Amino acid sequence: MEKSRRDRRVVVKRRKPLREMRCFQMLNGDRFRAKVINSRTVTLDKLPGGNLWEHMNRGTLTPRMLKAAGNEYRQRANQFCR
Image (cartoon, rainbow, N blue to C red; front, top):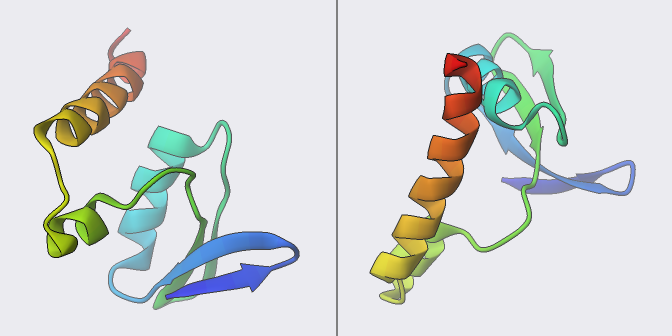
């Protein structure tokens, strides 16, 4: 669920918040914030760009989009292996 908090767009998650927050911070913590609200809820800054899940549901997802997303995450993940 998307909300606005202090002039920032955030995504509110209520599944496994601590796990999601740690992963988010590891990959995006240098530019975006994540905050635990309670034991079942976390808010994550909304990341810029398109949502691949929405593209998949609309039938507009392309191999080029998946490759770009994979390259981005590989680049970020490689930072932890150095």
